[in-house]
Length: 220
Image (cartoon, rainbow, N blue to C red; front, side, top):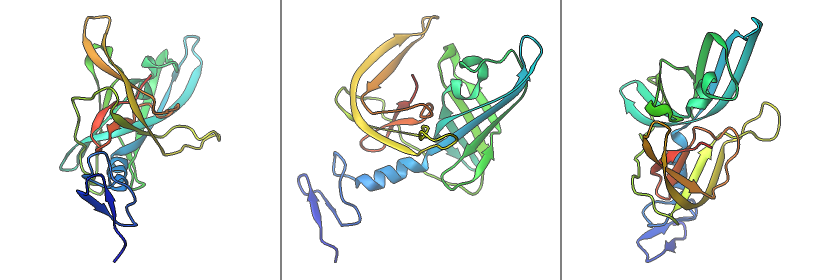
């Protein structure tokens, strides 16, 4: 038998293949990260159109997304609106001629989105839909009660520092602040600030607690 290591008060025992426990000793850290990773997708947005002077343009951008709902063959994904809407980002688009959103799931398959909707109040959130019978991850649970000082895990696909190369990135940290913010129409929402390091391309990825529950979508 593999030697066992005991975590905390001994409620969780782990083998060499699982070297550390999470904060409540309920699951191995490696198991939690594996579960989270299954729900992270890469998002690519492509748009063609015309500029104000009539010239033609082709633009593309990429970011991350989080699978949060699975119903039969339909999978719904959270991302940032600025990742998939050129009119909501610095990319800009005077006149759109065509748009295409491609999703890469963790099984390596590429999917063209079958649905797209945006959150109300101009929040930086979009919901994408894909249809697949092949990829069946577990839907994520959400944590609606984060606290300052709680451990967090930020996951996405930031740029690697080499042109056209992305990196699957996992960054750990703690919640620094929880702010109550308002949109300019008076709609209120909660913003979580953490010291988990994120970079461009992580937009739309997930911020999770130490147990693998979804806290929010990475932006700003």
